[in-house]
Amino acid sequence: MSTRDTIEAIYAAVVRRNPGEGEFHQAVREVLDSIAPALAAHPEYAEAKIIERICEPERQIIFRVPWEDDRGEVHINRGFRVEFNSALGPYKGGLRFHPTVYLGIVKFLSFEQLFKNALTGMPIGGGKGGSDFDPKGRSGREVMRFCQSFMTELYRHLGEYTDVPAGDIGVGTREIGYLFGQYKRITNRYESGVLTGKGLAYGGAQVRKEATGYGAVFFADEMLRTAGESLDGKRVVVSGSGNVAIYAIEKVTHLGGVVIACSDSSGYLRDDKGVDVETLKEIKEVRRASLAEYVAARPHATYMPGRGVWEVPCQVAIPCATENEIDAAEATALVSGGCAAVVEGANMPATPAAVRVFAEAGVRFAPGKAANAGGVAASALEMQQNASRDSWSFTYSEQRLREIMRDIHARCYATADEYGMPGNYVAGANIDGFRLVAEAMLAHGLV
Ligand code: GLU
Image (cartoon, rainbow, N blue to C red; front, side, top):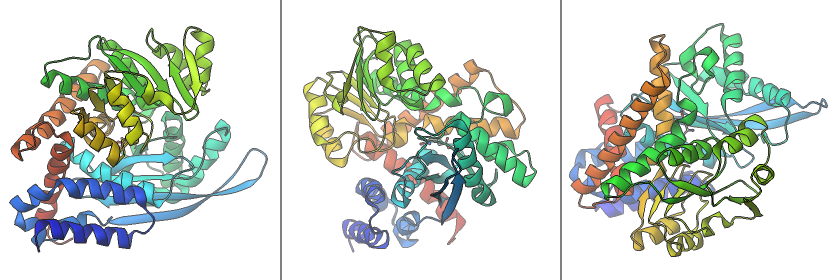
């Protein structure tokens, strides 16, 4: 069978064996479409059925999460942890609490995480978890009870050498605190390295909170510099207004760019003077309120309902909201608005059709598994500090993050060149991530 036919047969099997999991199929398709040249160069991968093994999670856990709301009503949610691959280290990846979470979303995130983690060059495997719990409108006490119930099952699958969760959408420092407290209570172990994204008061690391957003902007900066440009003076649109978006906006501003729009699930905000990150933090981190409230503090800004954020003309776009948030029409709108670079802060925010639009228009495009790897890289630094009972300064931690992002950029760029696809960061990231995992799997034998 030719390499192409082998890949098509593997993809067909993935679709058949994982019915109804569209996002997972999409993530697998994207990787398989890139790695043909690596397979042709390494026949030993096909012989050992590396791709088939990589596409099958090592373990998938689904569990019931019962909890009581403030009125005493009982709710049942579903919890997930997909431990995809431990060739490079303990399973590592966040937990997402959002009503759209189901097995297909967790599997796609976990699969992406595997290659992303490999690209960081740090000893971490790939995993992801979460629940269809909707934290919106829930009191702090309800969120705490939910986290405690969730951890009451999950704890038995975790460990600093086994599986180390962190945050993702709907899971931040507050939730990690409740999860850690419950883990400690059940196991009677103060195992700092079992969760990352912890608060600074009890084993968390400097720059972890900022790392995904900062890292994406460092990647954007590297990409622009390689093309002889910089972020200085650029008009930038960042979608979302959660943890990734807030710190992407902060770092773009530090580097001289102007973020003129951001968004939430109901609409988008436009502030031509540049989004004020302190106002945003106050609304989102302190008050946990709606983005629409920004206009009260900065009356020259406007908040519009709907998904029009990608219609705001910009030179650089940093999607930091969620998967498939940019379709072909929105990509076309970005291109006509003069956008020359797209850097994914979220996981898989551009649909395959949108990625094609960018490629045809010559827009530089950085896929999330490379560009947003700063978050998990800082998690690995947190694990390192926990293991040595040490804590590093903000400045040193940020410098480490910057070096890691520079290395990720360099390896994606070099791999794309090596395989004759200069400037193709998607191919560079997929081939390099795949090679790193494949080599470790070969070394471990058939396990
Ligand atoms: N959820 C984040 C990501 O998508 C962070 C994972 C982690 O720190 O383990 O990479």
